[in-house]
Image 1 (tube, helix red, strand yellow):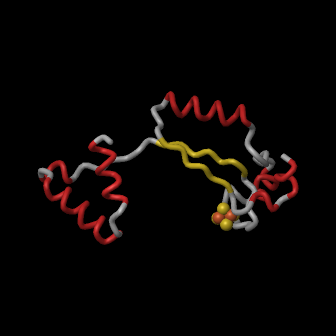
Image 2 (image 1 turned 180 degrees about the horizontal axis):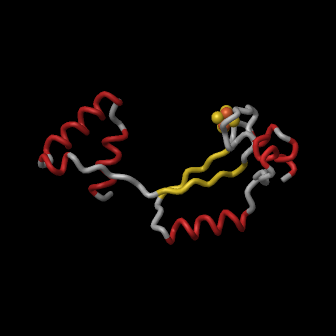
Length: 114
Ligand code: SF4
């Protein structure tokens, strides 16, 4: 087992309170300038379906809005489109995917059929 994996396993076993203490401990060991560094993970969103059992008036996952504006709904994203989105994201150096959909899209027959 590598040293990094051991550290991750150790951190996973901590309670939230202990984990916060550990993060502060590590942060305090850094130089003042390094403490200001903000890290991020380049990511992209993959919207699997824009059907949601709720219909919030402001939300992309409310399938009724697309109908009203003449846009096309994403009943269930096609495999080819997923491949294309992932390839594009990889070209931009994304390391993380956020998989999204509305709540219980499979409660709609149209999504079940797709
Ligand atoms: S995804 Fe959330 S915000 Fe959007 S319609 Fe569904 S419940 Fe509302």
